[in-house]
Length: 221
Image (cartoon, rainbow, N blue to C red; front, side, top):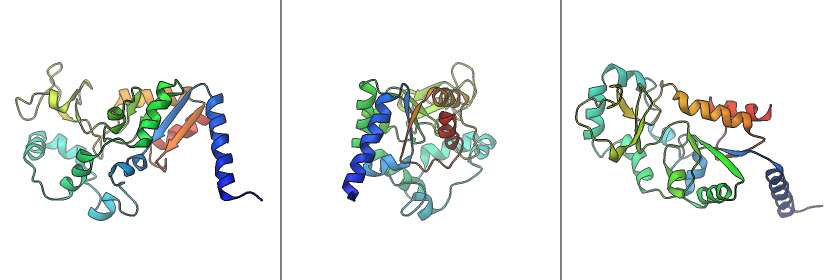
């Protein structure tokens, strides 16, 4: 009869063998990987939405209805309230060993791509290069017309609402709002990687929320 420790060791050996034998390994990552960095998950025990309630399901439509008011609120929002509670842990967070392990796998040539549902920028801070941020990045802004992105600190806001210097489209935070379509460029990369994948590492996510939930079945086909 094997002990729990032996069973775990056997499972790790099996996973290592599978990864070693695979040609195109990608990782589908969720909020669970960042909990060790001090960022709470959104749902479940201790989750942000569990404590303060779900965000506005019409967030993107409200942005479109009055983008100037959205930006005024964003630039002058108070330090109190649920918004500040969600921002502070991300501002203070640093990559943890889980993020660094994915960097090592990429540098070894084993891990080809990361599809992350997180907006915290920790994969990039850790040093990962090939990343599809399906829900955006909190440190970037994006033109909703042409899809161009800038780091927030590099984009100069000269008017409200800010406009894209290339196409004149509206600029919003890169983080995907509720009701907002996933940007097509990112979604295209995700499906391309899932189609090429012969081994998907599912890390820190239940993989139940679409479109991310569709990538493991795509990889299995």
